[in-house]
Length: 207
Length: 285
Image (tube, rainbow over all chains, first blue to last red; front, side):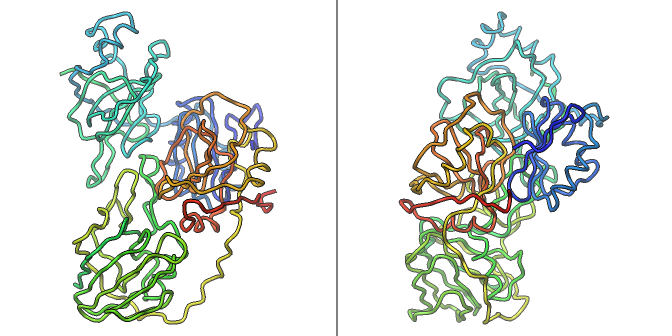
């Protein structure tokens, strides 16, 4: 249940059991900003997990004290821009023509449009290192496949709704595939195991 | 270093410690033992620290030998326990001599049995933990027949006397969930009035329940959001799922209730077909 919702407060806090709070904000940019702010000021929580319109704070020893700290955040709080990662893509995905039809263009048009955008990692989910990339204008949103494919190869670059994503490993999946990359999205032996952590900016480069 | 030779791994045996923290935002499940108090007891009995890794054995059937003598403790779902053919007891430290063989029968009750060895399972940690996550398989590989597992050096003598807090089996206490307002006003009450049945598909990711579907007042799709251990998530089919240690860190189904951490161990030991009830935890009111 919402415990706090006032016009001055840009976030609504919902208790989640004994030791967690879910902060609901207006959009994914605000969620990213709140998560970055919380990490920068070092709020007491084991986990700071951004979602599409929320940030979950889990493993919180004192939810009341955390609520006080979060009240200091504003959506326009300056957050340092994340690192920019370029991802080289071969645009030969099985759904490239389908997406071109939906966008009223051809395959080259899709490559130009997709490659011309700067994305940012809103949150990770589905699999370790699977990043939900924001930045596709709403008018280019595409529906998920009606029935997911039983196997999507690792490195596949796809779209679902207005999200863009890259499959870190082979898995079933319902995103519309534009192409593939050789970039290693997830490597548990690296000091930074996820190539695309929340806040990272991403550009796709055709090769 | 002592080596544990796995002759038979049973249907599912994994290495577990207290799990991986601080990586949920990268999509990494926490993992860790489903019955955390039983795992902690096993570690205490053999003199291990709280972060030592042990084995979680599903449905018994584990058979191992150690090439050097080692203290062992078996807790959780009670099993017939044999060391070199002689019957031994659960919930206490037992000595396995060099070359000795430890065998676990099928559990008399419950599902998951914990086997701690003095010194702990010393496989290489992955991202700071030796816990195996069965969703994405982050962590040490699943324990298979023929596996050889290193055992660390014991840090303390076994603790033969231990009085764990009593285990109160009964309805799982729940707190109202973050999306309780996506359901009818009486949904939590009805959840607590329903006798659910544990589904066959239950695993370390979630306990799947068959029974009355909580009625929603919102039919739109929930944008993906962070999920906690013990969340009672309600997918469109209406059959609730209690998220367990290997749950995906984010999900898109509304959470009606959250199981109190003190009662989560029961989810490790309920069998498919068992009845499960919830009880609203009034401490939250």
